Length: 191
Image 1 (cartoon, rainbow, N blue to C red):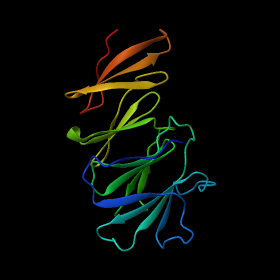
Image 2 (spheres, helix red, strand yellow):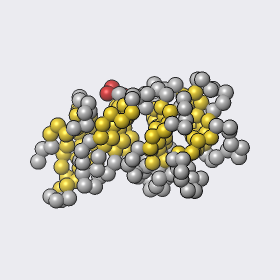
Image 3 (cartoon, rainbow, N blue to C red):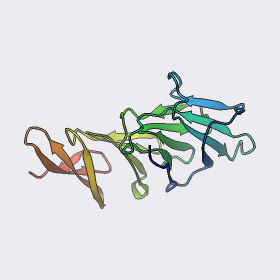
């Protein structure tokens, strides 16, 4: 596992600290993500979270580890919704409602390979092996069609487009793609 990343590009109404280990005495508000997981303690990401409403009573978020592979990210990201926090633990991504921490969404990619804030578009992008999922202020904004048979590489954002490369198994070559950041649809896929 690599050193945790912290990216607070979006405005947020919470403060969070990644803890080196779980506290010996658990706070009264402790949440485990996902809720039904075996051996969550092994390598879990432990985060102390404070909100303006409950600044004196933080909660502990314990996020189960996905993969120990250094390619799978770990860290904290702010999201387009100032009350949501994104925690990623070894490629398992959790969107946590800090005003009601029992409400969360686990991004379905196993693993998320890259997290990219696109502040000017109000999106937090989750890159998987084959597709990209965009999270907006009100939840999932879109999910792209399949862009690759194994591995998506992002090149750059060019205005309203996300440009990248995916690998096509049938032709055994890399194929360039352009995604519309508004809809997640492929705009053009040159040959």
